[in-house]
Amino acid sequence: MNRNELVQQIRSKKSYLCVGLDTDISKIPQHLLELEDPVFEFNKQIIDATSDLCVSYKINTAFYEAHGVKGWHSMEKTLHYIPDGLFTIADAKRGDIGNTSTQYANAFFKTLPFDSITVAPYMGKDSVKPFLEFEDKWTIVLGLTSNEGAFDFQTLNVGSEKLFETVLRKVSEWGSPNNLMFVVGATKAEQLAQIRQIVPDHFLLIPGVGTQGGSLQEVSKYGMNDDIGILVNVSRQVIYAGDDTFFAEKAREQALKLQSEMATYL
Figure (cartoon, rainbow, N blue to C red):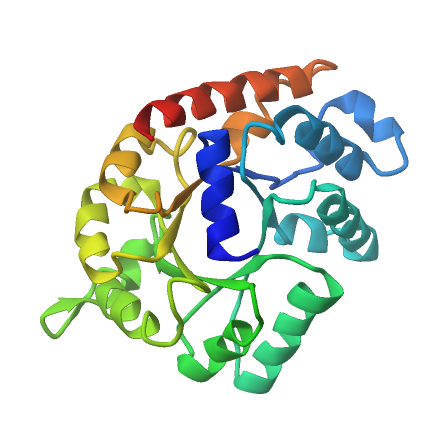
């Protein structure tokens, strides 16, 4: 999916919601466990209930890889079930030496046709570039994350700026706003204006709204650019809104609340 197609989806749906399919089998409704593939069935019903309200789905691969071949199969079926026109993210946080990154890119862009993948930039340019070589695919680089441990390294001073600022500035030179995004946690909303000065044109993937305490109003105010330029990922607040046979309807209610609020900011 190219940038124009993504922006068109956002404007037509009046939504920049990304639903995170971080599906934990221990948290899904009990009645699904009787089925052959409960994870896929859960995802299927969530997608059916929310696909008209969001523009993207993010699949956290760890929740699938933990179950071996069976989990990988559930992930593959989920990816192919997502309707055409929605932006798909492999939240895999890969990043290794160049030839290894090339194989990761092949896995998630060829074998599994995701639109994008999250990547850790710590090993530098040669670990990121292989992902950027695919046409109409996106590399989403960790910039400033929302976890507690972010303060261990990301906010350390490096000369006249913070380490995360150096990462944003340097990585932005490796790609373009047409194939490169950055992860910025919603709990760091007060720094979004500053981040926008460094990467004014790139899309930002923003997790942390809802359960983690991030404010949709704040990230919308400080994160948007002329092309909207943000995807707000919400996982637990949507997919675990209900734990009974009506879980999909409750997920839709939460997604609708988020989409309706987003529409007021566009």
